[in-house]
Amino acid sequence: MRTLAWNNMGVKIDGRQIHHLRFADDIVLITPDISQAERMLADFDKACGKIGLRLNLKKTMFMKNGLVLFATFTLNGTNISECSSYVCLGREINMMNDLAPELSRRKRAAWGAFESIEDVVMKTMNTRLRSHLFVSAVLRRSFSIVLFHIPSLQ
Figure (tube, rainbow, N blue to C red):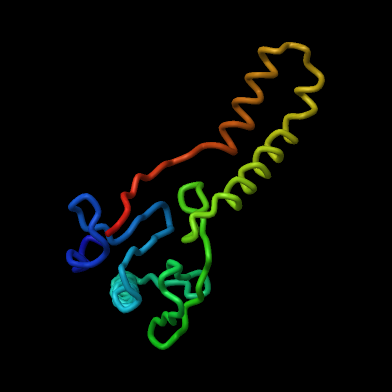
């Protein structure tokens, strides 16, 4: 990523050019238009090829905001599929700013976490232990949040 000439690509936020987010094996490219995204993805694919890696085009997707009505996205003639949302650092992101899917996902995670400790919680009368189990198993597993502040782009 450091060797790619992307200094003038991406979007400017607080005076800094932001063109990607990385975490583990996930990378999010951030661009103001499709043509720049295609170029960045082609550059990235080429850089990966130099060190023996290949992009998994079945898992590679793009997401556009509501201002773009129709867009095709390709890499070396292969169409890249569009997604309406994705999970990044534990939070579901969508371009409509709809929080309902994220809240539903977290509620399901909380109930799943509670079900894993339900037998123990119901058998103990120690309220301190019950509270500790709830906090450590349910709250930490389903509501750990990483927040990003991105000011509105103008």
